[in-house]
Length: 456
Ligand code: FCB
Image 1 (tube, rainbow, N blue to C red):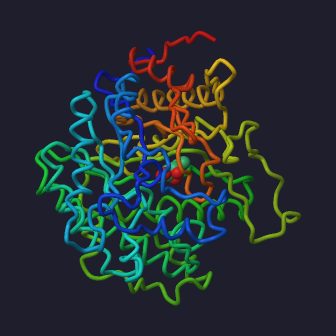
Image 2 (image 1 turned 135 degrees about the horizontal axis):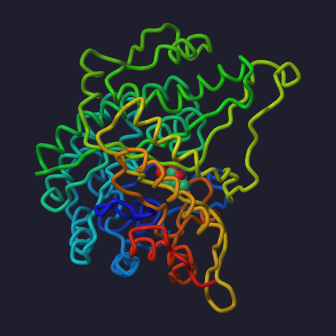
Image 3 (image 1 turned 90 degrees about the horizontal axis):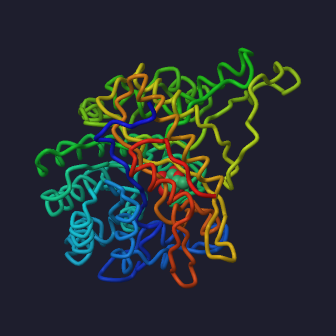
């Protein structure tokens, strides 16, 4: 049996800053990614999202592509600075109207809108007032969630509050690779807490504004394995899993922040005591507000090697990175997805899971005949769908799968060099060409299963 459940939600995903362009149109305010991209040295190819895929103007064509593909749902994000250019109001109607038109267009095409409120493009004014490390940003986000859901809530029932709080907090505030580019571990911990708190508070607002709302949060999760059975590697693996996965999963599940990881932060000097002074009474209860689903973004596994002892003193590695790597230099490891889903079911038992992102960067462009033979992406897609099905067959309540991404797009600090799309974008002409992987996905969706052969 290689069939998916009958109501399985097949989708594709994108995010606002990565595809929309039109960054100065219809009253949109500046976002932290406009500012960051304009800072020399931050984006590998010196580009920015000011044009991107010009989706702001070409969305009808993109909706038509999704309709052709047969997807049942489209996960996209709202650009906060289009809605609240100055951070806290007044609301910019024209900005919201864009999403209202998009939602209507999707529904007319028989595609369900699946909205992410925050996929990284915060209004720059809010960053100037402290950004996520500042507690005031929590109420700003909740106001924003309220405004958007009041307008779209009559047509959108499925909502994701945040995309990948680990990336927002760690890459944005600790290692500085993403906007706003800070390097301060304490800021990172406060940012992560305020993201989670704003999520919990927004869940209640979304429920009150939206009838039959289905609400969740999306985490990027990495199943980790120690590189060897040495005590040092086992401990490094515990610490990695603790900061990457459990730091977010545990408080959402009502367990508070993991004590072993707090102790790591104290030992490393990132915290002066085990008291997290940014946590106020009631916060942990709010963070644990029940949700309807957990969104999972999966790209690869982690093979964890200790850096606390010299390599020569550590045991020989027993786990090795596989031979196939994507253009991100990420290992292709499909069974990690099954492992991850089974672990989530066992340790956290969420009512429902969606894979809200999964995909691979390969640069493959059109051949002389105009066809994009992206065999490696097709292989990635097929094996990860197999891995998803294996999890379903073992009882994981997986409700859907969203391929990252519909289109090649602006891949953050990498600019346009990394292509994740099922659809190729020629940035000079904005021409879209469905790659072979898009044809594969279309065939899978049409059969609701994996018994699909494609002509070479
Ligand atoms: C995820 C992001 C998404 C995209 C993919 C490749 O971390 O959510 O926007 O950049 O990685």
